[in-house]
Structure formats: structure tokens, C-alpha cells
Image (cartoon, rainbow, N blue to C red):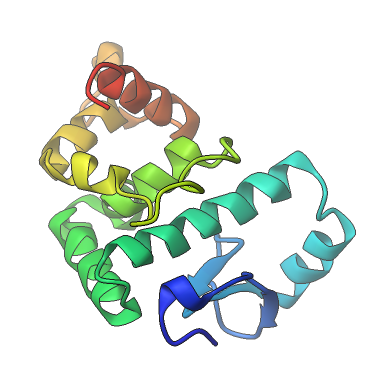
Amino acid sequence: MCHRPDQCSSLPVVPSRWLPPKGYTAITVFGRVLTRKDDYDEWMRHATSKAYQELYHHERIHLRQAVSVRNSWICYYALYLWYYLKGRPLRYGHEVAYLSNPFELEAYLFEDDDQYGQNQTKGCIGWKRLASYPPSLWRALMLDVSSNQCPPRKLPRSEFLKRVKLFMTDKW
């Protein structure tokens, strides 16, 4: 376990009994990637596949984000929780609050870019730009209003991320 995020030279993948919550494959906790036993076995068999490389890079981005938040795990997790709660999980549901969290948005947007955040000594800081917009913007981009359904249906994650990339194209 790393005491400070910048001290983590590697990010070991470790099987866990309780984390991550069901429906998720991995979670970064104090410098380790925790995954359930079944997912761990699958990960070890297919570690070189594109999907698992992107997942691992997603978790490395979280590590680099923690470096950018005063190089403190506690500050990072407190801020992560704050942004999650700003997404109003009780009103809009867990997935909407999760995806409107700027830490998750940055990690999803750049998980396929192996070089993202590697050369930044202060960590990954794209989340700061994403946090400057209100969660209501991300919720609006998440909804498909063209179908005239009431309430509007949520777009698949990939479509939502395309919309966010398009919105942020000239703002990075």
C-alpha cells in the first residue's frame, strides 16, 4: 500500500472479496487495483487484451488524479465523494452521479490514450476543467431528448462519452 500517490511505482491488481461493488470490474484503493475473484481470474488470463489494458489505464489515471489533489489519498477520496454527491445520486441514481463525477469523466475520456498523464509531474488535471462545469450539464448530455419520451431515456455510456468529447473539443 502506498502512503502517498506519487510513491506508487506500480499499481498491482489484487483479488478482493467485497470490492468493487457488483457491476464494476475494478476500483483503485490506496495504490492497489482491487477486483473480485472471478474478474481477477479473467483479468490474469486476458491481461494483454485491449479491454483490460484500457481498464488498467483507467485506474492509473485515478492514481495520477490523486497526485494532483495534494498528493493525498484522503483528499482525493473526500473530493471524489463531494463530486459524486453533487451529482445527486438520490434524485438521479447512482450511474448518473457516477458518470457526472469529473474524476470518472476524465478517466473514461482518456482510458484509451496510453500516454495521457505520463509526462505531467502534477498528475492528471483534466478533471479540474471538467469540474468547472455543473453536473446538470453532464446530466443533460446523458439524456436522449430526441425520442420525445417522458422521462427521457439515458444514453449508453459510449454515446454519452462521445457527446462529452465533442463538447470539450475546443475547451482543452
